[in-house]
Length: 199
Image (cartoon, rainbow, N blue to C red):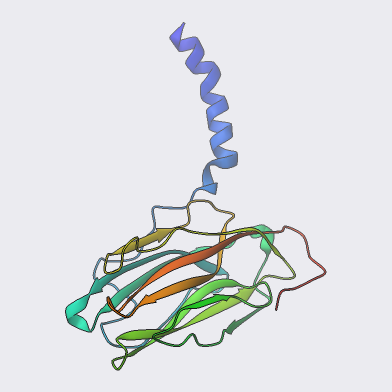
């Protein structure tokens, strides 16, 4: 009887996995453990390959190194239904030592980060590299929980679903701990062109 059930349900599980199995990201390949996008107290520029977006962010904090962090990112191709990026650009700079909120303009998705360290405030300024996909529009947007959960902790943020994309972030800065907490703005994207755009 067990063999009969196995023969009946195995093809169903195989078909379901084939249809829905690749909608799960991860685990992410950040490269070697010592491969970071930056070194402490230095600027960096990280861009995903063309047609890919950021799906994971990893960081470790070191108070002895100017209360700075090492950063690493993982990229994955955007869904085929979005097509190829029609344009990419750098957003405005978010200044060091301040709280900020920013989404990619023109319905863009985050495909990279650029940052410069400022020793006078023991913090970094940030810029998003954004890419727009045709005239696709975001919907069902939400904020993640805080990363890291507490100032000074390591962080490891991952997108677990294939059709959710990072569109921006909001951060708080602690003048006492000289560190930031991030909440990422995550959205789904329409599979059809929209007649409007955000600013």
